[in-house]
Image (cartoon, rainbow over all chains, first blue to last red; front, side, top):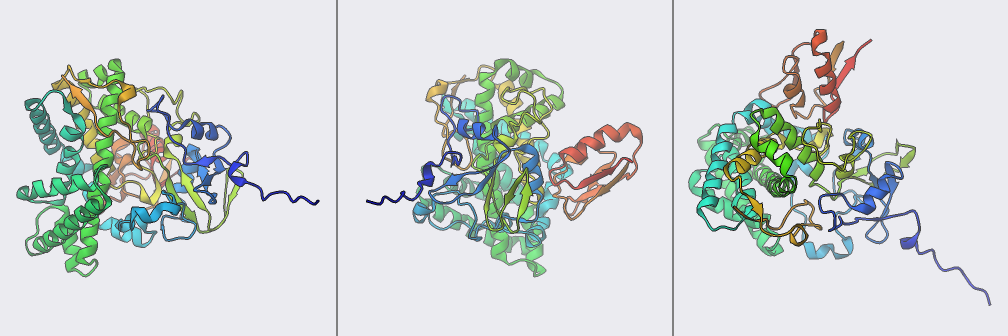
Length: 415
Length: 65
């Protein structure tokens, strides 16, 4: 009898690790232990994802920095080799991917659209918002202190602050804040159904579309008025402008909210470092602490995804044209070649080389604003509520292990 | 030290403006880098090197020959 060897079961081939691999609930602030182990075997590795796809994973800091600026990598998720962030065998259940405006486009179109609004995010203009962000933060802390104790910090502070800041930036009239907040909350809610999120997405898109119409008639000094001028000049349709508005809302909302809640919890675990943030008179100390929290927490943790448009040689490997590439920022941010003793939280280190906001042409456009919100929020919170403590032990805290943006479902606190 | 900046690659992050404000600025209209001093005095070299090294778009080039 002739026996034929079975087709190789490549799902178990040694040396091709599975991806994604979750963080460990024993170390909720650390990257996935499997992926950290992978990084020790070289900065560029092939992985197995969703059954039969074998994209490349890049873990090294230097390699990611080079690739993030390489125009031969495309962000367009319509490319056949694009590494899907969700299991394509179940993707129908997730519905259509939302239009993310220029985030899903390559240059030159990406840069043409991005530069219509990038002037809003210069260091000077964002710095000018500091007093307003301080006022919003103080008001939210006032409201939290006037409400029930214990409270959920996610609902009381982490989600509303970015939403208020973005509505200010876009130029949403104060009377519409409640509508805007309610819908933006649904849009990023972990418990809302896909249908509810879709409705909120459309409601916000329609609302911003109308508002841009009003701004064209009566321009102000805000971002929607700026977009209105581009619509008037024929460089943008009103719907494209409204989509950009929704993108800014989405991009700046859950990300900043999760940094607020996770960073607060992490500092509560490190009372000595918390005291430094709370008691310092030197704004540079707070700036440095925020950079270290961004590095250490690395909330964009399912990879920045690209498709190679040509063969790319990197770190002794050849990424073939058409293959998927996944850049793992949380491992770049723990690369011992760049950060000494990378698993130690040290708010006094120089963490500026971190890739929490990505890099290259798609580097996060809202990053100065996110940094400002965090620089205001942490010291304000710990100064105004020095007795703040987590109500739930760490092992019972609900971390968002599966979410595209890492964070907390809720953070019950008392004072 | 001679500095050149690549306006096409620049992503307007402003990290250089924060680190070395005497050497770098940003255009108001789109945040793209403005080089204030292409051959800065030696006292600025350390901060200029850090600016080039943290630039998220790798848009700052230094010629130190």
